Figure (tube, rainbow, N blue to C red):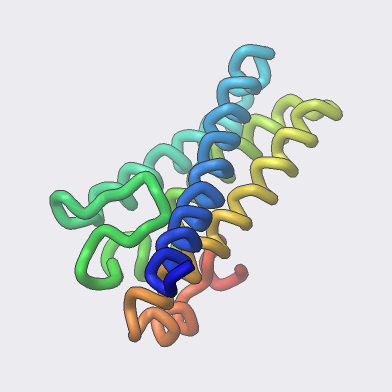
Length: 156
């Protein structure tokens, strides 16, 4: 196998590895909804889920036109450092986790905790894959990653 073919195969594997966690997160949200565990009358859960949606919208609007990608492969010519990206490198994943964990906290059960833990683990896998792609694509990504947290501002 040629070096170029091996690199293409590795890139394909990374894209699959990044797509599967995303699909699972969507499935987790659907599962919580179908089982009646997604929304709550609790004002704290409502506020957290509203904040999650607002964070996702803010993150999405921080992209330049035509550069947003659902897959982990970078879509722009530079690192986004505006909007929520000034504080965290993966605000859309943070928003998904906040939305899911607000649902879990308001409907505690073995099922919801398992869904929350699985979604968290898979998002972390996706962040790891994406971080590798971003470091390989943008030489200044390492410095950016040292000045921001991955998912929780000032914490992690």
